[in-house]
Length: 299
Image (cartoon, rainbow, N blue to C red):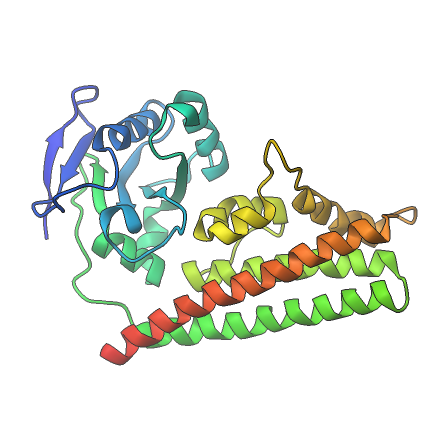
């Protein structure tokens, strides 16, 4: 399926592709999406193409929160990663001036995209709306669906492994806190459990390992996937939620710093947040697995 591409006035090389069949009412502002594309390509990135996928284009749900789920494919690894790209967008397009506040941006190389067949890439390429395509690249939709039975098996293996490890660490943290009063051990187990839970969620949704073990970074990458996770960990102007920075500190301080200490009541609060997080991720990842299984049974 080829797309009908129209030039954007601001940049002749930049093209907004309007699908031949669009829903009567869009769930996003095309002009705002065009400004996002213009910002990303204005001296920062030289992408082959940019796709908007997920809820906003009527595709398979990705972000639970209303967000621009964007896949930007580049030929070479760029100078700026996804975290810096989000900062660029925040500086150039402040949240208060956007109709949709959240932008969930993925940056992947063309070589990786062409070499891997994951549910994430399949949904983005088969259902996504092409917002930009370079002059020299010819974008094509997938001709055949991926092997969802294999995708389900791979994701289920990671789900079972890391979810079980996370739950076991939660139990050990609770035991260390309530019975032996070993604060350092309880803190370390709590933080490691959170990392395992995030790895569970990431692999089930994306079909690849996450390249970070920092709970703050991992949450920022995946927060829009679940509004319940956002409610659990996102700081607000009214309520100070500082569990994630503390978990990040626990991973190093509780392991190596002999003077590490924290009030048992505070640690118990953080442990409760991580336990709640495990339940949320187990539910969301479980629903995703059910989708893969259902699609595999149709093949």
